[in-house]
Every structure is written in structure tokens, then in C-alpha cells.
Amino acid sequence: MRSICIMNHKGGVGKTTTAINLAAGISRQDRKVLLIDLDPQGNIDLSLRVKAENNIYDAMTGDATLSSCIVNIAKNLDIISSTETLTKAEYYLYKQDDSRMMLKRLLSMIDGYDFIIIDCPPSLGIMNQNVLAFCKEVFVPTSTDFLGMDALKKMTKVIEKVNESYGNNCEITKVIPTLFDRRNKICKQTLEEIKQEFNGLASNPIRMNSKLKEAPKNGKSIFAYAKSSPGAKDYGVLVDDVLSMKSAA
Ligand SMILES: Nc1ncnc2c1ncn2[C@@H]1O[C@H](COP(=O)(O)OP(=O)(O)O)[C@@H](O)[C@H]1O
Ligand SMILES: [Mg+2]
Image (cartoon, rainbow, N blue to C red; front, side, top):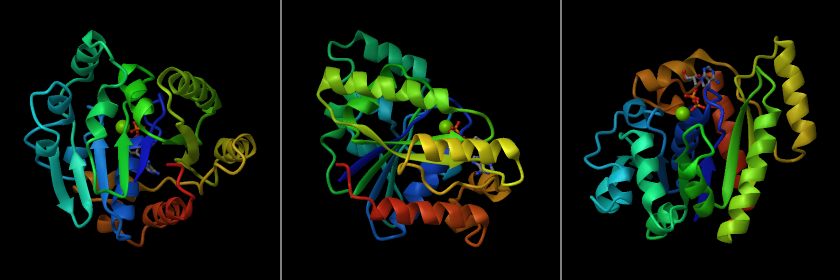
């Protein structure tokens, strides 16, 4: 089972869009996927019209079982959503003894999936440190419309620290250039920088495409909403790339 988190402490770089469409795309290739929303602002439940009785925080605090949080939304695709405020969850975590291992302990019970994909909140706080203590792979969506390289370097440091402290071997295995506009000079420059700096880790760029914005408003992934759009094409290429990677798990 591959465990992948979609993380960047910058907001608006395409994390949620990537998590949803990657999960949907992979599940359409006959792999069983569990998509976990850890971003209270991510609204994956709204974007995919999921109606869950319990959310991930209920399971973390012991108010619900993990299995009662799982909702099946399509063939091969299950979801755990998040609805509470992150502040509340982070506050709860801070009070626990082993506060950075809570999520790992919970998710280690999960079985029967080929992929767990986690959409992360835009921070490097305790929740994301929990994620890093559990996952083996980090995918970093990086906007090409501003220079976001500092964010990548900062994340690398946090990952190293969590690995050291919690005995994990999580690593960045994909940097995904997002919001790409070929006509924009900054976009082209940033894409080149990403390719140079993260030699071999950079995926195909995800172009700016209004269908990617419309799809969640219609409660659908890009593949269900506009399967011939540039957005579906770009995320389709990413899905094939991810499936052909040697699993870092
Ligand atoms: N490739 C894209 N083309 C057009 N709009 C996009 C694209 N990727 C993301 N968006 C839009 O940009 C906004 C931020 O994206 P989102 O995935 O929510 O970022 P994050 O989760 O990193 O905050 C959303 O409105 C989303 O629909
Ligand atoms: Mg998000």
C-alpha cells in the first residue's frame, strides 16, 4: 500500500485539486484508493458531494471508529472527510503524550487499499507532522505563477526532522508544477527552476484550466466533469506517471 500526502504549507497551490483528481484518476485505473481530507478548508466533501456521519477528528479523539468515517463514493474510491476546525484538532493533539504519532497509530489499522492519499492543510504544524510520521511519500504541488522554491526547501527540512525524530523514511517523491500558463514568462521560468532543482522529481506541469475550477462546484472530479479538457489530460498524465513509479513504500 502506498501512502502519499499532498503537502505544501502555501495555500492556493493546487493541493486539494491534485488530491481529488489524483485519487479519482488512480481509482479509475482499477486501484483501490482511500482519500483522506485533513484540510478543514479543503472541502473535499463538498467538492465530491460526500455526506459523512463522522470525520477524521472524531476518530482521532476516539469519538467514532475509523471505519464509521469511511464513505464509498465511487468504484474503488473511499473517502474520509474533515469538517471540524483544525485549531480544535491541533489543540487536542498538543494535549496528547505522543502527539505526533496519533494519526499513524490510527491509520496503521487500515488495510485493503492500494493507495492512501491525504490532502493536507497549508501549514507545517502538528497535524502535518502527524502526516509526515505516517506517510512514505510526499507530493508537493508548486505553483508556477510565483517563485515558490523557498517553500520546497523549508518542507525538506521539516521532513528530515520528523524522519529523524519518529524513525520514518518519508521523502518527497514528486514535485507537481501547477497553475501553469505557457504564455506567462514567470511560469516558464519557475518550471525550469523546478526541473533543475528537483531533477527527476518534477512531474508534467498541470496547466491553468477553468474546468478544474468548475468541476468541484459540480461535485465531480475532472474526469467525470470534463474528460476531454486540458485539466483531465494533465491529471491523466500524472496518474500514469504515479502508477509507473517504483513505490517508495
Ligand atoms: N490547474 C488549475 N487551473 C485552474 N484553477 C485551478 C487549478 N488548480 C487549482 N485551481 C483553483 O485554484 C484554487 C486553489 O486550488 P486548491 O486546489 O484549493 O489549492 P490548495 O489546496 O493548495 O489551497 C481553487 O479555486 C482551484 O479550483
Ligand atoms: Mg486545500
